Length: 120
Image (cartoon, rainbow, N blue to C red):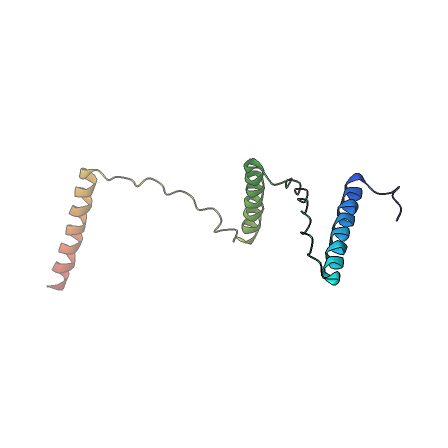
């Protein structure tokens, strides 16, 4: 094994493994010879895993969501029918004056009177 290319963490792990192997060999020898087994060596705690990096901020998620909504809007606009895409707002209804309504009612009564007179 070449120790020139190993990092310090690799060297430490190798030393830990050698200690574990030596402890297991001692236990095996004690078991085979029939003497009282030596207590198991205390294991060293493993180095904690590095904290997870990355992730995304709320602002980043919002930017991505806005961009995706824009892309879908373009897709849906392309699918839409040309005439049905934009509906004009309804115009305000015109209000008829009381005099205008009275004039229309009088005209309708006169027409119906003429129709009834033609039937007789």
